[in-house]
Image 1 (cartoon, rainbow, N blue to C red):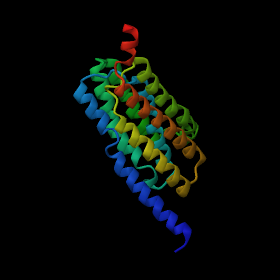
Image 2: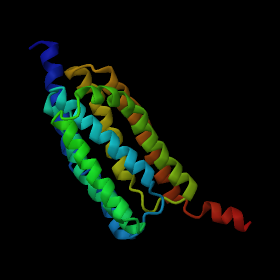
Image 3: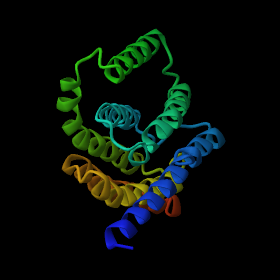
Image 4: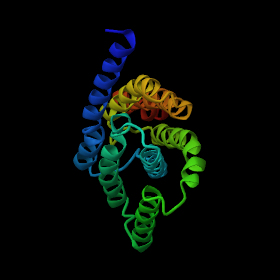
Length: 216
């Protein structure tokens, strides 16, 4: 058995592990929100940017005919992302007519991209923007935690799974297509997801540190 074949088996195995973990990626965060009934420390802007990135990358991979195993986590995460965004908007009392119109526009646009009613060149233009968009979404979430000095509504487990699955994708994408755009996106995501996880752990283990300093 050649090294290439062995590496391909490893890649396929990591893809299955990644997809399996992504089935529950947002579950700890959703559970945390349901328990706390609060969206403090959650960045709504970050969620919308994350939604944009996941949606574009799903359409990009699908229309390019890439192996389903190399991107199946995107549609899986999207379903969880929809419910997560709904909960955050609910707890922020931000569900209104404008929100519903935005939802309608989003789904019409995604349908157009997937069916290529909207020209594929649009995706070619949008895909490179996903790296800064994805990075911005995570930076926004990191700043939201630091600004609130509160991570009670943030699940470190979700961000650990995110960091781990992004790391496995660096290898599987390299094996499948070596797409530099996708590789760069995942490498940056590993670093930022890890940063959010550590920030959440820090503020959850030191919830009153800043209050004590102010009292002194």
